[in-house]
Image (cartoon, rainbow over all chains, first blue to last red; front, top):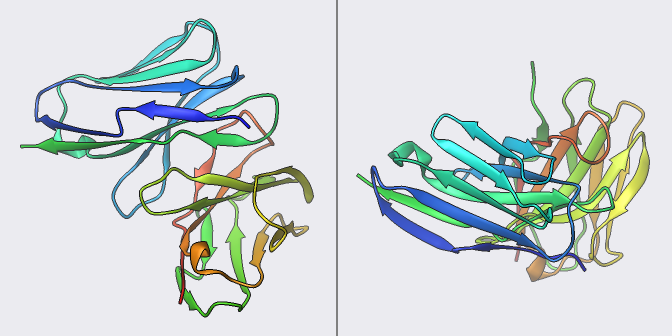
Length: 110
Length: 113
C-alpha cells in the first residue's frame, strides 16, 4: 500500500536556527498537505500544494512540492519556541484516503 | 463557529468490550474521516464518509465500523477491544470528499485495560 515517510524523525535546534523536514511518498500524489500537531493537541492544517514544482511561503515557512509529485519539504527559517511540535505531511493518491507521513518532531531550545 | 467536536474526550474500557465514539463535523461539511493515532506515530486512516456513504477504508479489521447520519455527524464503533486499540481517535471533517483541507477535532483518548 501507499507509504509516506518523513525524515528526520526528530530534530532539536537552537532558537534562531533553520529547520527542514522532508517527505517522500511511494506513489504519485494528487496533492500534498502539511499539518502541525502541538504536544497533546490535534493536527492543524498549514497548507496544501497541488501543482508539480509548486512553492508556497507563509511568513517563515516555505513549502515545496516535487516535480514528480512524490516528495515535498517544509523549511522553517529562524525557528522560534512557538514552532515546537510534530510536522506531518499528508497526501491523496488516486483515492479519497488522506495518508499521513511518519512525522518530524521539532524541539526548539531557547 | 463551532469546530469539529468529539465525544467523549477520554475513555477507559476493558478488553473484549465495545466502544462508540462520536463526531460532529463543522456546519456545512459533508465529509467525515476517522483516524487512529498511536503515541509517537502519525494518524492512520480508518474510514472516510461522504454524504452518508463510505468512500474509503483503511487497513483495519472488521471489528472497526462506522456510519454517518443524515445530519453528517458520525460514529466509530470498535468491537472486541484489544489492548492494541489504545490510541487517540481523531475525527476530521471537510467540505467535500478527498483533496481538501481537513479540520480535526480534539480526539478521543481510548485506553483499553
